[in-house]
Every structure is written in C-alpha cells, then in structure tokens.
Length: 158
Image 1 (spheres, one colour):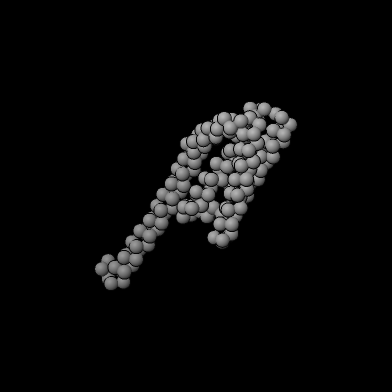
Image 2: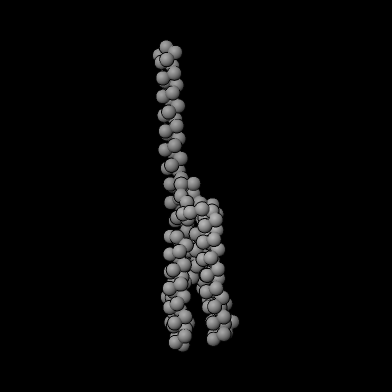
C-alpha cells in the first residue's frame, strides 16, 4: 500500500470515530473504527520504516527523494494531528485512564499485526531476494562457463 491510501483509510476511520463520539456513542461501540484507524497508523509507520531500507528489487514510493520526504512528512503530520485530537477528545470525555487503555490496546494490536503480517511480508521479501540472487548466480555462472569454454576452443585446448 502507498501512504496516500493508508492515510485515506485512517482519515475515513477517524471521521467515523469523530462522528460517533460527537453523537455521544460509547467508545466501546466505536471499536471497529478505532481498530481501523490504529491499523492504518501501524501500516503507515511500517511503510515509513520499510522505506528507510527497502528491498533492492522494490521501491515503495514513486518519485524523487524530495517528493518522498515531503509526502511522508505531510502524512505523518496529518496522522499526528488525528492522534492528538483523539487523545484530547477521549481524555476530556472519558478521562486520561481511557486514553491509556486505548494506547494499551493499540500496542497489543501493533504487536499482533507485526507478528502476523509484517513477518509474513519479510519472509516473502527474503524468498524473492533469494530467488533473484539464485537467478543472477546461475546466469553469471553459465556466462562464465561459456566464456571459458569458447576461450578454450579458441586456443584449441578442446
């Protein structure tokens, strides 16, 4: 996923959360929206970390380094603003303890997501890296063999 679609997902969940909380729904009733928003934030953070050290065969963001830096910064600021507003809202209406509960749940979700999805993606990346390396090794080994074979024929050794 790209940062724009992740931010759009987070924005949609945030708007749903705010609309629900503005109509005085209980925070527990807004669990799905909160989970979607937390997932989007975790995905963005993972994407940002992955961009710092992408696989050699893949570039996560398209465009120049300056575009990438500005895009990451702007989306990170937008998510930070959403987090701050949710913190203020939840802390004001439900008390600081509820925000700490939300942070605890978010940490648990982040850990679970990291264990499940991000490790799976890391394994897929490792398999692709290995396959590409094996193909490059086989091609270069074959080319080296052919080079020495034709060189030996040229010199009349076989």
